[in-house]
Length: 191
Length: 198
Image (cartoon, rainbow over all chains, first blue to last red; front, side, top):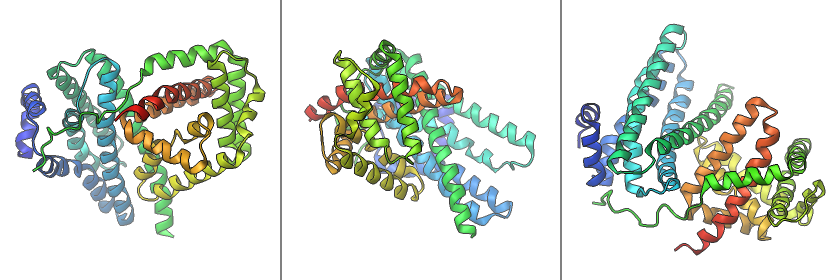
């Protein structure tokens, strides 16, 4: 498995790639090391660099670590939410399929993490970069739907809607808590 | 090398119909809205005035009030007092729960959030099965380990409903009793199923 090839395949033919991966899953360590890790660290590195460039090294460490934990938390959360929501609508999804689908649906958002390098001070650039992040997340929603279609899960629109609702709630909850904790930590470290 | 295809057959755990339980919770609150809304306000106000020390007894009182309503018995504000039958166990469980979350929050939030969700049903064990403080926390953790997906979804539904309620402020008057009733109904359905699942 190669990151570049997986990402290109996900853009060119998501249905084929998801069908192949969901029916014959790759090995755990290989999947985590070659696909998840390199992509999930993009946003933390972008957060880190953006703060270092603006001359805030302590904030860079706190934000970088928070960003990494936030992404991991959201991935685990999505992998847990998905089979439960599918079951609400009388479908079935194994733990493995759920984890794989959660990973592939998160890839566009992870890739969009590089947009966090855009400085917050330039308003138009900030707005455009965040809109691009939302667009990437929307492609993730499409991938989620495509994966569920391949697995012939019933009531796919409702499943995707409920899953996105749950994911956004989880993201906002974690993001809010990380914001508060990071501020407290920064005040403590600076003093 | 371990393959991703080797999934545990019971990994998803027991299941409850969240939509049906949500409808039942709304129906139960609407059957006696004055008592439910009033009790919800008393719970929140009592918690804030006592700096959350009385949160657990009041919460347990509310859970027992819902149990009475579910059984078709009459309910009143005074039933919040049912949570003060064993206040020490309730307050201790609350303090341990709160302290553990605060300590784990320091380790980049996620462990604290996981523990908060994993042990959230401890107060339902205290209220409905008369467990002791430590036992209630252990049982709540065991319940979550058996049904992690459904517990997470129930917690997120509760957070989402209350966020929507808080945005409108007045909506909180309805969403607090509805979500607590919903959690009570979920616990009463989920707990026996989780206990009997392998």
